[in-house]
Image 1: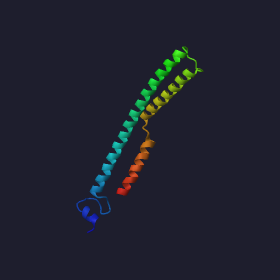
Image 2: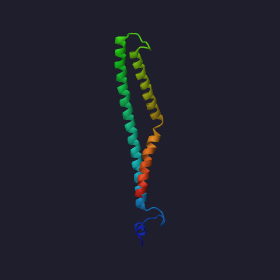
Image 3: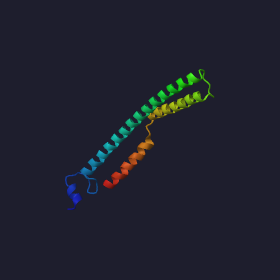
Image 4: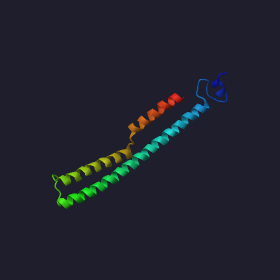
Length: 124
């Protein structure tokens, strides 16, 4: 008997099918894939939270500077322009957070998972 026949002697699958060990390995890879996706989501959430917090502090500091130098808001004043730019950045971050909450970044996940799948094909 060849090695595959010996390996699958106690297996209920067909001769050309996957062995129990191979099926277990594939399922293990699927679990690892899900864990990877969960970790990527967690990392993205933490990153966005840090970014949001940092921009909030920058806005407060920029507003204080702008009010000290030019008490009333003027969209043409360079200090108030800086505040406006930071607030636009904050809106962009909030938009990304909302987007993430409703639709995780599938393209990034897909790219990572493709590389995982291609490396596992060579193993199997």
